[in-house]
Image 1 (cartoon, rainbow, N blue to C red):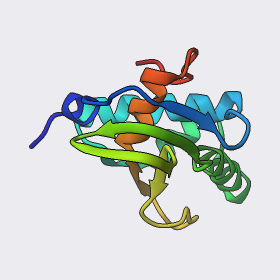
Image 2 (image 1 turned 45 degrees about the horizontal axis):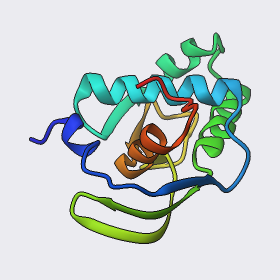
Image 3 (image 1 turned 30 degrees about the vertical axis):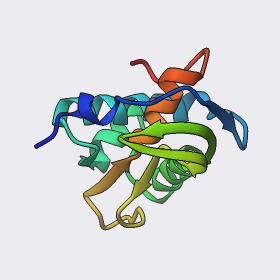
Image 4 (image 1 turned 180 degrees about the horizontal axis):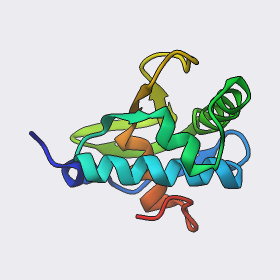
Amino acid sequence: MRSLSGFLGMMAEGSISFVCARPSKDAIRLANALYQTALFSDSMSFTVSLKRLYALFDLTAGAEALRYLYELFEELREPVKLQDFSFEGEHYAWLSVCLCTLEAPLALESQCVVVHLDARYLEALRRFDKAPYIIF
């Protein structure tokens, strides 16, 4: 199995452009929690319990709390434009990527959600953003 640090290496000079506004304070909080989970699990894909996510924002499980989490995940799905960089041996003149995707939609009957983080996004944020919102 490849370590997470292996996913976050080997990127040449390039640039990052946010297509939309930077995420809100709570979306940034979620992004950092997801990143820390990835580090702990040593994988870019992992399962996180909805109960843990509710606790992160002091929410009571229910439709309104689930809707709030959905909105935060939507913010984290906003793309960034990456230009002129290489990653893991491939060169990209232009690429649009987002921080994370969910394997399945959030649902009240679900106990957990599978999250996939994009290593290209994380590496671009780490290297090119002067004030990255994820604590590396």
